[in-house]
Image (cartoon, rainbow, N blue to C red; front, side, top):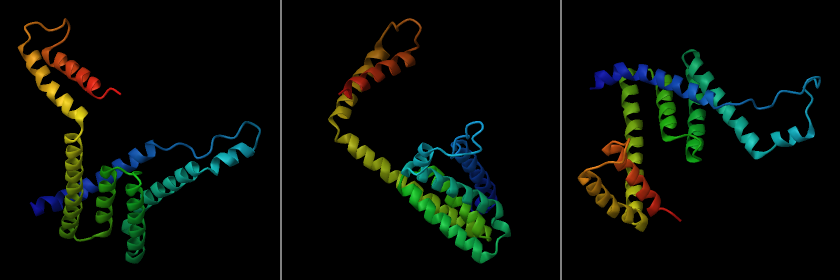
Amino acid sequence: MRKLLTLLVPLLVFTAAALWWTHAASRGVPTTPPAPAGSAGARSPALGTLQATPQAQAYRERQRFEAEAKDFFARAASLRAVERSERADALKRQIDRYEAAAGLSAGEALLLRTALVKATVDDPAQQAAEVAVIADRYRSHADQRMAAFAAQQANDPRFQSYKAREAQVVAEVMAATTIPAGLTRDQYLRQRLQEERERAYAP
C-alpha cells in the first residue's frame, strides 16, 4: 500500500494543485473596471471609494494569495531550501486563515496542503506519510461534522415529523397500483418525499 501511495501521490498532488488553481482563477474578476474611453485611466471619486471598501480589499488580498500560491508551486523546485520553507509556511498560515473564515472549503484546503507537502518534502515515503496524516485529519473532521449534524437533526421536531411521514409515503407509493401519467415509480416517490420535506420545514 505504501509503495502504491508513493507512486500515486506526486501525480495526484500535481493534478490537484492544477485543478485548484484553475477553479480559483475561474472565479476571478478584474479588480478595476475598464476606464471610460478618453479618460486615460483616470479614476472617479466613486471608484476610489468603492476600491477602499473592506470587500474590495478582501478581494485583492485573496487575489494576492492565489497569485502567490500559483507562483510558489511553479517555482518551488528551483527555490533554495530556506526560501522554499519560508514561503510554504506563509502559505500554510494563509490557508489556515481562509479555511477558518470559510474562504476555502475543506476540499480546497486539503488539495493545497497536500500540494505543499509535495513541493517541500523530497523523500517519496515521507511525502506519502505526511499526506496520509493530512487526509486522516480531514476525514476525522468530516466524521465529527456528520455526527454533529446527525445529533442536531435527531433533536429537530421538524426532521422527526418528516421521518415519520417518509416511511408512510414510501409504503404508499410502493403499494400503489397506478402512478401519475408520465412519472416512473421512483420519480413519483421523489416528488412525494420532496412535498413532505417542504411541508415539514415550512415556516
